[in-house]
Length: 553
Image (cartoon, rainbow, N blue to C red; front, side, top):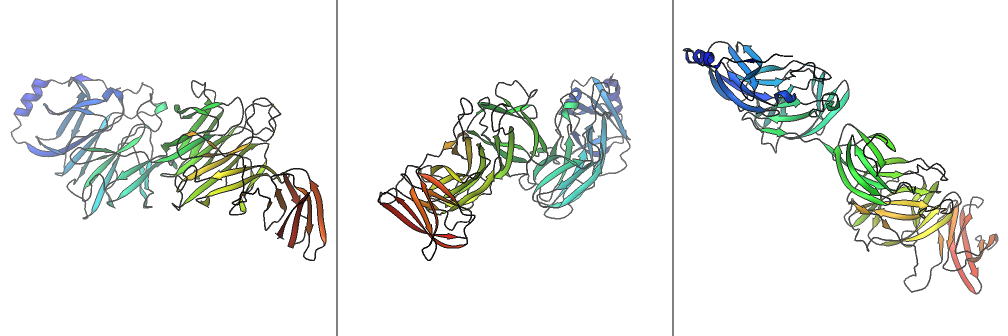
């Protein structure tokens, strides 16, 4: 620990007054010490206080001071009484001098890595960038627990800007064209932070600025001190904090366990979502990008992250949106049992084509190992095919219209239910939505099980929107008979508003190749034994006859 002592002010005043042959020196001071004991400091030159109450992550402007002989500076607490540091330097150069305060005061306080409090100096020309239109940057490393720092530029893909910068060191002058950059700071090959550096917005064209790296890489191991961050320091002392780069995550609660009626979400030890209820979505949360993010999911009654249901890490790209769907169970006697998990997928908030609606599907139906969704009113095609539990599709761009879709259980090819997907009813033109299968196919295995259905999440917070079961008629007002898909490959589905009745399938020459009777409104036929070709399908129920040609591929 550096022992504080008192400055004999009268002596310094007399010494300063007697300096008959003073020379001028240009100095800028930057405060980069994260030690709370030196949150604010005063700086004295000889006997004169030249800086008053310089606070952490602030700077003085470049100023000219008279100096006689070697430079001698005293860093004191903000009262100007207790001296924390004495700095002496011959200042052999005549240019501008930047002095950065960094390090710690008490070696016994419990910091993970102790570096003694010091002023580190750089002599450089702060007048202007070396080339017109550029911005010159000089990094100074003031973080005590960060070894061999590497900084790369990743937005413009400029790559590595500096490597191996140690505590208390300045980088060489880095000449950049004035633009918007993203700096990635790493140590020992691990990314520590990403920040946005808008040199245009900061008005730094033709200028020189320092980039102060300060704070702690691991605040939890350093008395919960300030986290690592970067700030631009301008010649006039203005500080421009560089905001942390972020990705954006929407959480959707689709875990059908009755014991998971609401959940909390934590980032590190901070609760970022409180009481997210079943079949509800959050808005998009902004979280740091480019680094591993510890995420914990807890019951809504949890007071912290001591007993999480899920403890995992996610990784976000800067400016990218994601959807994170929570599915599965924690109650072991529920069957079929799918473990409680979170599923992350890059997402959109708007459709790529403003005249359409983009739909991302996620399969979370309990008792539905694999599912398909078939559109049978306009497109007559699969929107989803053989999607296993817990999986996403890619986005599907749909015309802005209203559709009829069938949820199909691919374990036996049966239609679970038919739904109306009314994009116009909810004004979904130009939006990107997430559709989930949700609930239990068999609700008889336990009490209070939510029945299976299809639900939609929009890009803002709120309850999911339930798709209504289909009760529809065609444009003439007549009930519909549907035979799909057409063309078909492995399975043919039949749907009728009343009993399907007798089914016959004939080849091109009229020969009977299949017949069966169905007394339900839904049925499916295994086509695996059929040869490719054109067939005629007949549905007869009493006096009602429906015929349709079928192509089997």
